Length: 308
Image (cartoon, rainbow, N blue to C red; front, side, top):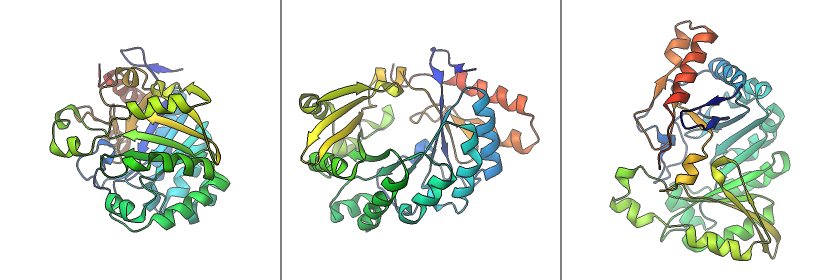
Protein backbone atom coordinates (compact mmCIF):
# COMPACT_ATOMS: atom_id res chain seq x y z
CA UNK A 1 0.00 0.00 0.00
CA UNK A 2 1.37 3.41 -1.01
CA UNK A 3 -0.14 6.73 0.05
CA UNK A 4 -0.62 9.48 -2.54
CA UNK A 5 -1.29 13.16 -1.93
CA UNK A 6 -3.90 15.26 -3.77
CA UNK A 7 -1.33 15.99 -6.49
CA UNK A 8 -0.74 12.32 -7.27
CA UNK A 9 2.67 12.27 -5.59
CA UNK A 10 3.50 9.02 -3.77
CA UNK A 11 4.94 9.26 -0.26
CA UNK A 12 7.78 6.74 0.04
CA UNK A 13 10.30 8.58 2.28
CA UNK A 14 10.19 9.73 5.87
CA UNK A 15 12.69 12.32 7.09
CA UNK A 16 12.77 12.24 10.88
CA UNK A 17 14.39 14.99 12.92
CA UNK A 18 15.65 13.38 16.14
CA UNK A 19 16.70 16.52 17.98
CA UNK A 20 17.20 20.24 17.54
CA UNK A 21 20.38 20.14 19.60
CA UNK A 22 23.60 20.60 17.64
CA UNK A 23 27.28 20.93 18.49
CA UNK A 24 27.90 23.21 15.48
CA UNK A 25 26.66 26.75 14.82
CA UNK A 26 26.24 26.95 11.04
CA UNK A 27 25.06 30.50 10.41
CA UNK A 28 22.64 29.59 7.60
CA UNK A 29 21.07 26.53 9.29
CA UNK A 30 17.34 26.14 8.59
CA UNK A 31 16.79 23.67 11.48
CA UNK A 32 14.85 21.38 9.12
CA UNK A 33 12.18 24.06 9.04
CA UNK A 34 11.62 23.94 12.83
CA UNK A 35 11.88 27.61 13.63
CA UNK A 36 11.31 27.37 17.36
CA UNK A 37 13.41 25.32 19.72
CA UNK A 38 11.46 22.30 20.95
CA UNK A 39 12.68 20.16 23.82
CA UNK A 40 9.98 17.49 23.71
CA UNK A 41 11.95 14.82 21.82
CA UNK A 42 10.47 11.48 20.79
CA UNK A 43 11.80 8.40 22.58
CA UNK A 44 13.36 5.45 20.71
CA UNK A 45 10.15 3.45 21.33
CA UNK A 46 7.99 6.22 19.86
CA UNK A 47 10.23 6.55 16.82
CA UNK A 48 10.10 2.79 16.30
CA UNK A 49 6.31 2.75 16.50
CA UNK A 50 6.05 5.60 14.00
CA UNK A 51 8.34 3.82 11.53
CA UNK A 52 6.54 0.50 12.00
CA UNK A 53 3.22 2.16 11.10
CA UNK A 54 4.84 4.04 8.20
CA UNK A 55 6.26 0.80 6.79
CA UNK A 56 2.72 -0.60 6.55
CA UNK A 57 1.78 2.45 4.50
CA UNK A 58 4.46 1.81 1.88
CA UNK A 59 7.30 3.88 3.33
CA UNK A 60 10.55 1.99 2.73
CA UNK A 61 13.11 4.76 3.20
CA UNK A 62 13.89 6.71 6.36
CA UNK A 63 16.43 9.48 6.82
CA UNK A 64 17.41 10.52 10.36
CA UNK A 65 18.40 14.11 10.79
CA UNK A 66 18.55 16.92 13.37
CA UNK A 67 19.92 19.30 14.62
CA UNK A 68 22.72 16.81 14.85
CA UNK A 69 21.37 13.27 15.32
CA UNK A 70 24.63 11.92 16.76
CA UNK A 71 24.41 14.18 19.82
CA UNK A 72 21.66 11.86 21.07
CA UNK A 73 23.30 9.21 23.21
CA UNK A 74 20.62 6.68 22.20
CA UNK A 75 21.33 7.06 18.46
CA UNK A 76 22.59 3.46 18.10
CA UNK A 77 19.45 2.14 19.79
CA UNK A 78 17.20 4.24 17.51
CA UNK A 79 18.95 2.88 14.40
CA UNK A 80 18.75 -0.69 15.67
CA UNK A 81 15.05 -0.38 16.48
CA UNK A 82 13.90 1.02 13.13
CA UNK A 83 16.11 -0.87 10.69
CA UNK A 84 13.84 -3.99 10.56
CA UNK A 85 11.01 -1.92 9.05
CA UNK A 86 12.86 -0.21 6.19
CA UNK A 87 15.01 -1.15 3.21
CA UNK A 88 17.03 2.08 3.21
CA UNK A 89 18.07 3.80 6.43
CA UNK A 90 20.26 6.88 6.14
CA UNK A 91 21.36 9.82 8.25
CA UNK A 92 22.51 13.41 7.79
CA UNK A 93 25.31 14.49 10.10
CA UNK A 94 27.96 17.16 10.50
CA UNK A 95 30.46 14.31 10.79
CA UNK A 96 31.89 15.41 14.14
CA UNK A 97 31.29 12.00 15.76
CA UNK A 98 31.62 9.75 12.73
CA UNK A 99 35.13 8.64 13.54
CA UNK A 100 33.91 6.69 16.58
CA UNK A 101 30.32 6.05 15.44
CA UNK A 102 30.56 4.95 11.78
CA UNK A 103 31.26 1.30 12.59
CA UNK A 104 28.68 0.87 15.41
CA UNK A 105 26.04 2.72 13.36
CA UNK A 106 26.64 0.41 10.40
CA UNK A 107 26.48 -2.59 12.70
CA UNK A 108 23.16 -1.36 14.12
CA UNK A 109 21.73 -1.15 10.59
CA UNK A 110 22.52 2.27 9.13
CA UNK A 111 23.01 1.93 5.37
CA UNK A 112 24.40 5.27 4.30
CA UNK A 113 25.21 8.74 5.48
CA UNK A 114 25.19 12.36 4.24
CA UNK A 115 27.94 14.49 5.76
CA UNK A 116 27.77 18.29 5.65
CA UNK A 117 31.08 19.50 4.25
CA UNK A 118 30.89 23.10 3.05
CA UNK A 119 34.61 23.79 2.69
CA UNK A 120 38.02 22.12 2.65
CA UNK A 121 39.73 25.25 3.99
CA UNK A 122 39.95 25.32 7.80
CA UNK A 123 39.33 29.06 8.11
CA UNK A 124 36.31 29.03 5.73
CA UNK A 125 34.98 25.90 7.43
CA UNK A 126 35.18 27.66 10.79
CA UNK A 127 33.45 30.77 9.44
CA UNK A 128 30.55 28.67 8.18
CA UNK A 129 30.16 26.19 11.05
CA UNK A 130 31.39 28.20 14.02
CA UNK A 131 33.75 25.39 15.04
CA UNK A 132 37.33 24.44 14.28
CA UNK A 133 36.69 20.78 13.47
CA UNK A 134 37.49 20.25 9.80
CA UNK A 135 40.24 17.72 10.55
CA UNK A 136 37.95 15.66 12.82
CA UNK A 137 35.21 15.64 10.19
CA UNK A 138 37.61 14.57 7.42
CA UNK A 139 38.78 11.68 9.62
CA UNK A 140 35.14 10.79 10.22
CA UNK A 141 34.47 10.72 6.48
CA UNK A 142 37.46 8.44 5.97
CA UNK A 143 36.07 6.08 8.61
CA UNK A 144 32.51 6.23 7.25
CA UNK A 145 33.64 5.17 3.76
CA UNK A 146 34.87 1.85 5.24
CA UNK A 147 31.47 0.86 6.67
CA UNK A 148 28.69 2.83 4.96
CA UNK A 149 27.79 3.13 1.30
CA UNK A 150 27.37 5.54 -0.25
CA UNK A 151 28.81 8.37 1.80
CA UNK A 152 27.49 11.63 0.39
CA UNK A 153 28.99 15.05 1.00
CA UNK A 154 26.52 17.93 1.26
CA UNK A 155 28.03 21.22 0.18
CA UNK A 156 25.74 24.25 0.40
CA UNK A 157 27.35 26.63 -2.07
CA UNK A 158 27.45 30.25 -0.92
CA UNK A 159 28.56 33.31 -2.83
CA UNK A 160 31.80 34.83 -1.59
CA UNK A 161 32.38 32.03 0.90
CA UNK A 162 32.92 28.67 -0.78
CA UNK A 163 31.78 29.14 -4.39
CA UNK A 164 35.42 28.99 -5.47
CA UNK A 165 35.84 25.49 -4.02
CA UNK A 166 33.35 23.55 -6.14
CA UNK A 167 35.90 21.85 -8.38
CA UNK A 168 38.26 21.13 -5.46
CA UNK A 169 35.32 19.40 -3.80
CA UNK A 170 34.61 17.41 -6.99
CA UNK A 171 38.22 16.19 -6.89
CA UNK A 172 37.95 15.42 -3.17
CA UNK A 173 34.83 13.30 -3.79
CA UNK A 174 36.62 11.30 -6.50
CA UNK A 175 39.66 10.82 -4.29
CA UNK A 176 37.67 9.63 -1.26
CA UNK A 177 35.08 7.53 -3.12
CA UNK A 178 32.22 9.73 -1.89
CA UNK A 179 29.33 11.33 -3.78
CA UNK A 180 29.17 15.12 -3.86
CA UNK A 181 25.84 16.93 -3.52
CA UNK A 182 26.01 20.60 -4.46
CA UNK A 183 23.10 22.38 -2.78
CA UNK A 184 21.63 25.78 -3.49
CA UNK A 185 20.89 27.92 -0.44
CA UNK A 186 17.17 27.53 0.32
CA UNK A 187 14.73 30.00 1.84
CA UNK A 188 10.97 30.54 2.03
CA UNK A 189 9.49 32.95 -0.55
CA UNK A 190 9.23 35.81 1.94
CA UNK A 191 12.98 35.62 2.65
CA UNK A 192 14.32 35.65 -0.90
CA UNK A 193 14.39 39.45 -0.89
CA UNK A 194 16.38 39.73 2.36
CA UNK A 195 19.93 41.07 2.32
CA UNK A 196 21.15 37.79 3.81
CA UNK A 197 19.73 35.69 0.98
CA UNK A 198 20.88 38.06 -1.75
CA UNK A 199 24.36 38.22 -0.23
CA UNK A 200 24.91 34.45 -0.12
CA UNK A 201 22.66 32.89 -2.77
CA UNK A 202 24.75 31.31 -5.52
CA UNK A 203 22.77 29.94 -8.49
CA UNK A 204 23.91 26.47 -9.52
CA UNK A 205 22.44 26.44 -13.02
CA UNK A 206 25.73 27.56 -14.67
CA UNK A 207 27.63 24.93 -12.63
CA UNK A 208 25.18 22.32 -13.82
CA UNK A 209 25.79 23.35 -17.44
CA UNK A 210 29.53 22.92 -16.88
CA UNK A 211 29.00 19.51 -15.27
CA UNK A 212 26.91 18.53 -18.28
CA UNK A 213 29.78 19.43 -20.61
CA UNK A 214 32.36 17.49 -18.60
CA UNK A 215 30.27 14.43 -17.69
CA UNK A 216 30.86 11.07 -19.34
CA UNK A 217 27.43 9.93 -18.11
CA UNK A 218 24.30 11.61 -16.76
CA UNK A 219 21.51 9.83 -14.84
CA UNK A 220 18.28 11.09 -13.34
CA UNK A 221 17.10 10.20 -9.84
CA UNK A 222 13.44 9.63 -9.11
CA UNK A 223 13.59 11.80 -6.00
CA UNK A 224 12.97 15.40 -7.16
CA UNK A 225 14.16 14.38 -10.69
CA UNK A 226 17.66 15.34 -9.59
CA UNK A 227 20.44 14.68 -12.05
CA UNK A 228 23.67 12.82 -11.31
CA UNK A 229 26.80 13.71 -13.27
CA UNK A 230 29.74 11.35 -13.65
CA UNK A 231 32.73 13.63 -14.14
CA UNK A 232 36.32 12.58 -14.96
CA UNK A 233 39.01 13.93 -12.60
CA UNK A 234 42.69 13.17 -11.94
CA UNK A 235 41.46 10.78 -9.22
CA UNK A 236 38.97 8.86 -11.34
CA UNK A 237 35.27 9.51 -11.91
CA UNK A 238 33.48 11.81 -9.46
CA UNK A 239 29.75 11.39 -8.91
CA UNK A 240 28.06 14.77 -8.48
CA UNK A 241 24.41 15.61 -7.78
CA UNK A 242 22.92 19.09 -7.92
CA UNK A 243 20.09 20.09 -5.59
CA UNK A 244 18.34 23.18 -6.89
CA UNK A 245 15.13 23.64 -4.93
CA UNK A 246 14.55 27.37 -5.35
CA UNK A 247 11.71 28.28 -7.76
CA UNK A 248 12.01 24.74 -9.10
CA UNK A 249 8.58 23.33 -9.97
CA UNK A 250 10.08 20.03 -11.22
CA UNK A 251 11.82 19.55 -7.86
CA UNK A 252 8.56 20.00 -5.93
CA UNK A 253 6.40 18.03 -8.36
CA UNK A 254 8.59 14.98 -7.75
CA UNK A 255 8.96 15.18 -3.98
CA UNK A 256 8.15 11.88 -2.27
CA UNK A 257 9.04 12.92 1.28
CA UNK A 258 7.11 13.54 4.49
CA UNK A 259 8.99 15.20 7.34
CA UNK A 260 8.70 14.54 11.06
CA UNK A 261 9.79 17.15 13.61
CA UNK A 262 11.79 16.22 16.69
CA UNK A 263 8.77 16.95 18.89
CA UNK A 264 6.48 14.53 17.05
CA UNK A 265 4.67 16.48 14.36
CA UNK A 266 4.28 15.69 10.67
CA UNK A 267 5.61 18.51 8.50
CA UNK A 268 4.69 18.44 4.83
CA UNK A 269 7.35 20.82 3.49
CA UNK A 270 10.64 22.29 4.66
CA UNK A 271 9.69 25.81 3.58
CA UNK A 272 6.18 25.92 5.07
CA UNK A 273 5.33 26.48 8.72
CA UNK A 274 1.53 26.32 8.63
CA UNK A 275 1.46 22.60 7.95
CA UNK A 276 2.26 20.89 11.26
CA UNK A 277 0.15 17.92 12.35
CA UNK A 278 0.79 16.62 15.86
CA UNK A 279 0.77 12.83 16.30
CA UNK A 280 2.91 12.48 19.44
CA UNK A 281 0.21 13.82 21.77
CA UNK A 282 -2.22 11.21 20.44
CA UNK A 283 0.44 8.51 20.73
CA UNK A 284 1.17 9.45 24.36
CA UNK A 285 -2.56 9.53 25.10
CA UNK A 286 -2.91 5.89 24.08
CA UNK A 287 -4.02 6.20 20.43
CA UNK A 288 -4.38 2.91 18.55
CA UNK A 289 -2.36 2.13 15.40
CA UNK A 290 -5.53 2.72 13.35
CA UNK A 291 -5.93 6.20 14.84
CA UNK A 292 -2.29 7.01 14.11
CA UNK A 293 -2.74 5.79 10.52
CA UNK A 294 -5.59 8.31 10.16
CA UNK A 295 -3.34 11.14 11.37
CA UNK A 296 -0.67 9.95 8.91
CA UNK A 297 -3.17 10.02 6.02
CA UNK A 298 -4.34 13.49 7.03
CA UNK A 299 -0.74 14.74 6.86
CA UNK A 300 -0.21 13.20 3.41
CA UNK A 301 -3.37 14.87 2.09
CA UNK A 302 -2.09 18.22 3.35
CA UNK A 303 1.05 18.02 1.17
CA UNK A 304 1.30 20.39 -1.74
CA UNK A 305 4.16 21.52 -4.00
CA UNK A 306 5.77 24.69 -2.61
CA UNK A 307 6.92 25.97 -5.99
CA UNK A 308 4.03 25.53 -8.39
